[in-house]
Length: 199
Image (tube, rainbow, N blue to C red; front, side, top):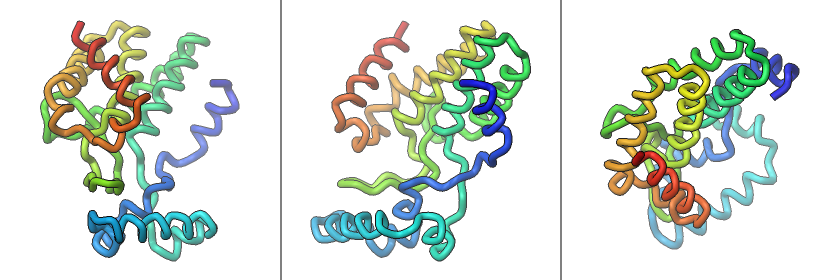
């Protein structure tokens, strides 16, 4: 990550839109969220229609609010930590730690260990409520905590990495968002991560 990217990250808001945020609204789920073939086809047609409409005006008309996505925050924290490793500039470490503090507070507190999910409902062949822990989101954020521990040897970061491992080992099979795990690459990544965190 270069200096210009860092400047851009500092200038923009952490809140934003997501390609799935319309489908993740309560009203959308109420209208089109039934889990049968007909409604899956309707959702597919709506998704095609959405691709032909300008995204920002559409979100304004539908009153979609910008949200902070924990996965995006994890990626930004990792980017700052990468910049810190390259430059040894404490400023980047401070920015990463501010994001990590937010992530620690914003985690899902329903399940054992530390985990995170998307800030909107997810629709596919199954319905996944917003905030449901995801192996993809949690794994992305885990990378940032691991990088922080490797850069600082922080006992707090090590403890949080262990808490994330508890989620992967104890809760993933019951909370598992099958949508992500159906894909072979995610299944492999999740499997390898679960092996790694056992140590």
